[in-house]
Image (tube, rainbow, N blue to C red):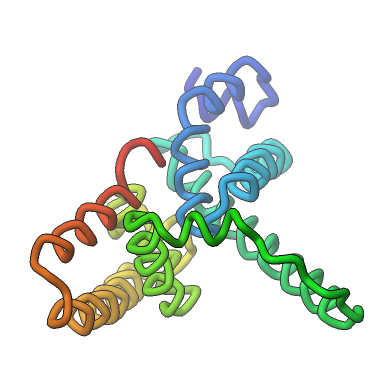
Amino acid sequence: MSIRARIRGGDTEAFEQLFDEFARSVYGHAFRLTGNRSVAEDVMSLTFLEAWRLRHRIDADGGSLRPWLLGIATNVARNTRRAAYRYDDALARIPRAEQVPDLADEVAGRVDDADRLAAIRRAYGTLRRQEQEVFALVVGSDLGYVEAAEALGISVGTVRSRLSRARRKLEKFAAEREPSRPSRQVRGDRDLAARFTREEYR
């Protein structure tokens, strides 16, 4: 019996195998979508809880369940963001006390790598949510167009167009930064961008 059929039938050992195989990948995808390690851990946990709840929807036949899990993680990350926005909005309505300077931020601001990684995250943040999701799946998680389309429940053509728009925007951002930056530092930016999608975050 396939692992798909076993999980669909409620086999907890098969589900544990699924977790062991793909937890790192789900976490990496969640981190690329949220930019926060703690939130990514929450998203990963919720993803597998949701996957267990939805196990009856798994087809008994098919390939890897990774696209299915990453699709669930994408939805969980969306819901997490919405909840965070509501929470932040509620906090914004509360009168604020005088703030104490955050020395940790000041120190981090002096670290060149941290500055450049922050710039890359700002560029990523300029993408629309749908573009971020496609970029994170195809570039960050190495899914093919068909797998990304399956994960998001959209057409392959939509995946291609969203990814194309995302790449154009990021390339424009990089081009705007490069003229005033020494070539060595520009290469450093590219290295950090690569680190954003490196295996350690998968």
